Image (cartoon, rainbow, N blue to C red; front, side):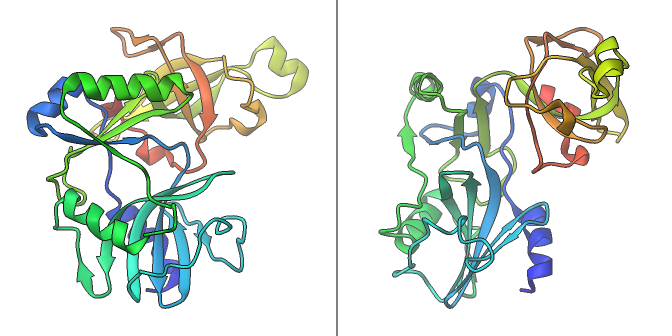
Length: 276
């Protein structure tokens, strides 16, 4: 597979997690559930062909051991790996690569296998590498919510809950239980405030998402952000993750503030359906 085609392959094939009420999700995904910590990184596929390794993100990033040694610093030799493989995971800055699924082994497409079987294959491939995302098998609603609370209390981003009997990419089979109510939206415009006139940098932005018809929906203004967010990086078209208390009847975010700028997403991925 040519390296310039890898990002398209990732974008077209990566399995997606939905945001739903846990009780509603369990109606279509019976217990037990596989629970993994939600990682705060960049979604990537690891492509292996012989001794060659390439990481590709869904938005064009290509990483190789020679060109990006820091990314591969904690990736040891794959002693038990097949000649070729495609693995799914996340790269977290300053922590390294983490893997949680497998799509292909040599010439065999394993996406139709259930998650339990894919986990067994993944474990064999990366045995002894410490790259596998640790997971728990929860047998009750309460166990899932307790796991989420425990991860959040330790500073984690939340939990990803998966149906162990699902095929790879099966709709609604992966669920995100995030730390807060958040939404990924894009910056539509900025407000000219006295502070902006003084500094030249906007500090109040109008944000939006796309509805099912592809029309932009204005979610209102956000003018607060956490300390690590640089307002100079928040420009028209930027994708930002916004925390909020609730959504008003006229579809505006109440008490929003920016958690981070998302360089790994595009405006087209910011959908109104996140609020469902």
